[in-house]
Image 1 (cartoon, rainbow, N blue to C red):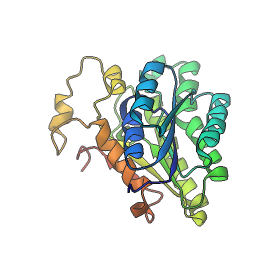
Image 2 (image 1 turned 135 degrees about the vertical axis):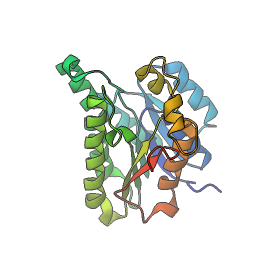
Image 3 (image 1 turned 90 degrees about the vertical axis):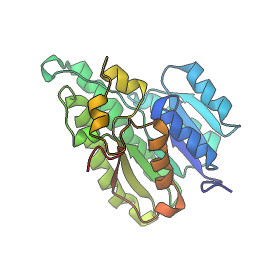
Image 4 (image 1 turned 45 degrees about the vertical axis):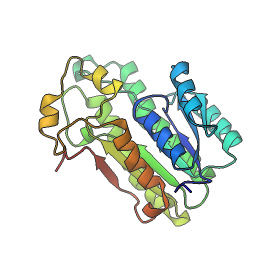
Length: 244
């Protein structure tokens, strides 16, 4: 038996990278998972095919609240309830502050902060008691690089929402935590750092390699499981020792 047998999970942004690894791990642990994807139908179909009938894809843009509401409705129809929410979908917007447009600002905040906030609002109303909410943040809220004002700022808001939600939902046994990956070998990382070999990052990391999506999924699985019932309001750094 898996640690999550009988559990119903919703994962945003589950067709690639860290989100895909999270969906794969939750299914392996016994959960039935609905995940969203924004554009890549082929990638989403691959995740569904590998899910052995326990993974379901719904196209939705986390930055669009109408899309998100439709996602929630379809998830409840498919799952019949909700035990686990993982807010993973993100916009990796980067660039110097002087080049930021209002449209760039709104998009980053809509996807990385507003969308997860209203997903937690939905979970607060519909999640079963003793559920789990896990928000994917970033070490860039503490190791702050140039060009990351929108990404780091929007994720910092998500981290604060996590703490407040932990207080508000705790009376029902619902835990709310964040996971902050370090440099993880995903397309988003490479898109945000074109041409970077990441040798200096690896050199400063205790475990001497880039993270893999499955490394982060392992931490999410821990927080989603029964053994994490006494962990809430925390931000777990999953960086291989990039921050010591």
